Image (cartoon, rainbow, N blue to C red):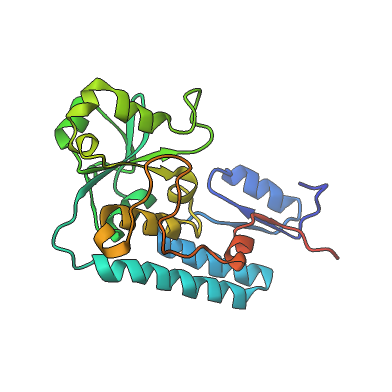
Length: 241
């Protein structure tokens, strides 16, 4: 870090307070980012913009993201029927996303009800409890770092495990892959996840649902985050002096 001579360091969740304090003691300017909700993400974008002198770009990015969020919630907030949804991040044992997580917020804004909203954050659920809950939709994480089974290991488990064939979501073909990089990261791509999940749960409102196989494609009809957002998501900025 010292050799890189950064003018500004962004510390994400996972960097301990000791590390942050050590960097500051060495004379580095460190800004810690730890968003817990989509609103926090937008505020962090504005903070990054202010810290880097890119206020206008940050404001434009936030404005677009807010508009995209509203385009979804404007159609889902008054729905009378909201299907039950489970988001699974691992299968042995079964880990699900409960309340207080990005995934729970995405499910709610997308017009669903978290089947495990009664549990706190990320929790282990017993097989029988999962079978009893019988969610109408199952969203499974995918991506790199998923162990020896590879990218779709959780999806393959649900589709091939005999006991899971009792589930309504499996019988109806409502098990969907969502890339962990968009639904489990505290950054602007959380809006991509919202759009994809909304299209999956309510294709009548948002068009074709998300694909079940990898790579987890974004739902048709939705835009991608502009270059300004991508630039603002960089965690280390070095300005040539």
